[in-house]
Image 1 (cartoon, one colour):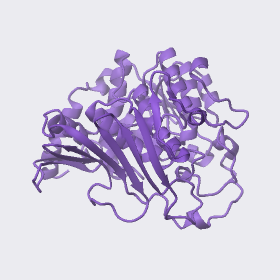
Image 2: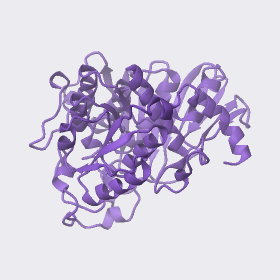
Image 3: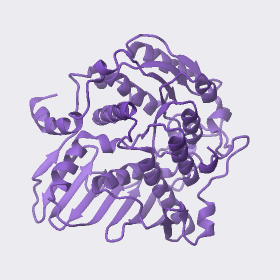
Length: 453
């Protein structure tokens, strides 16, 4: 980390990290026993950041991909203090049946979040679950109910809330009133998330012998196996997630809600479809817009997986407009521009901590600019496990952000605006929309319900 970058980042680091104790000392004699369900890309990113901030003992790993599972177990043995190789499981139910885990991390594809999370609550573990919390609204409601019923601390992986430079943006720009009266917010993603030649040409094949494809599919509809889907390509299919709105909008919407202290929108409207990339096998929209109505504050989402971003510095970001200026904020930094000025007067960049965590430089597929945010997010989880409080991305906040994005997709599917009743957890006066709050489950899996967890 060079001197200039250190000086730019120190303020953000102090704001984000000063509230947390030295966990290496605090938990030296009471190591938390950890299990991970889903040992792919982000599962390992999350787990290794937890290992960096606390002397946890990773005792269990679970994945339906034997090759991925075996590789992850070897990696964990080199990274954790004990150097022990964790036990491995192909079925999360067998892992949780042991009831010997203090913390369970869930980083499966989206369609596999709800059932393991609810079982982990019943097993007495506290939880770190990737976003969006569920693949449909009723799943999200059941997950919240389970967390509250079994008194579990649940942190959702919307780590923009723990990103040092975004904490700085919130505190130095928004809380200080530099924006003045805020009347409009734009959130966006212009990443090319569908335009891959393989999505158009890859044939259906038999699943590899190291992958239990039936278990991988789980409650989702059974599709012929295609190498696009696993690993990571599942995001291109609505059967397993909620498209770019569920994957990328949820982060920026959640960030804006946290920064501006917003709850549920009163109505959600969205339009979109596959307008550009028509030959691909992918069935998520390549173009979509949504408006989340907060009364006198509309939050407007746009994505398109083609063309260029209007602002090259902020291809995945939020633009918060006030009568005194504009805040641009994303994963790669933030800038505040006073009204009428072309130069930013307040700015910040991601915090890199290579001197303390040199492995960040070499870890395969790690988003290095996000590593510090995950660490802060894990520390916040640990602090609230100790206090039995609610973490910054508590499961209820995850429910609001995730369900709001899912409702945008339902609005686009039905071609009309939806009015949301947060008290009943239903769309007002729209039976057709309410039927879409719950996806059909493939037998023998049974859809969870809030009243039955």
